[in-house]
Length: 391
Image (cartoon, rainbow, N blue to C red; front, side):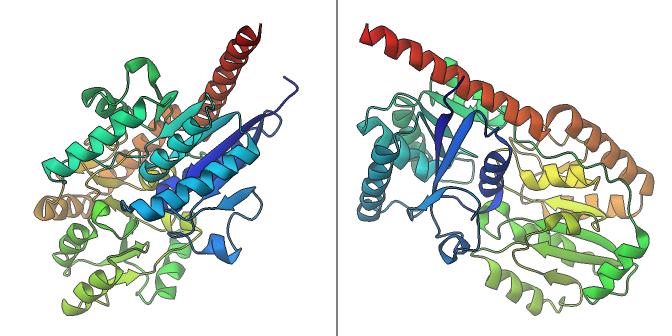
């Protein structure tokens, strides 16, 4: 194939797992086959506007708001339409719900034939009211009519798509999120001690890590409540991430006189350094696609406690690759943490099993290979159809 396939990615979400995914595509899809461009919003990632993020890749800024705002949404639609009209991509790949709507509409108006959509976790979930879920599902179904393929990042997302009849089954494909498998194994006790002392601890604590956007979806409140019940234990609690609940979390920690226990470090770029020093990773998410934070903890061989939800249970098999708790179960989470605090052998068993599960199913090479094959096959199919129509 002489011509490179031009792929335009569109995303309102430029933080968290979606952002990790976009960077992986930019860095790992073969340049010999694909010319990738990006339309991104800087609202969740001001560094894009400041010129200090993603500078090695071809992107244009179109700010998109997360909530429904007819005026702002129409402005974003017009801007994206103009970019697509000028760039003439072979494939438009929309990521997450807002860009999924605006990008698919713009590409349909232009009568471009290949429109892909990755939800990265649907907006409808068990923690919304029924009316809100009805609206979200209805919008997804309408958009499904103008979608060539809907790419699920997990089997859980695939199951949700089928159960809610978002698109016909033949339009669905699963491309699991993946990570670059690390060869690093085991903890360096001396480095961990230095790490702890740098953050104001004694140096011998059991480190409990939490890495997530500090927002309702990730439910950091349940995590903090569980850790507050463990004050008598020799633990250090490290929270990485920023978001709308930052001030609420800081106040909660201060009001409980627990500032010696917690370190809320905000957004950090090199999360791998922190995972290497965690003794336990906790995820209290209420809904997910296939969380990169858990994949990264598995990669670093950190034992994991997570909520029993779609997109997580295929990663965390209870008592085999990690421990599961019900969402919002503070007492259950506290008890599971206590179990790992007192059982070193269980820690080792869970972390080793999780790493093996990761290697088998969730490598970045596998993710890139499947997505590349999808792009090429859809491009070739459309090329054949176009030639047939012309003749």
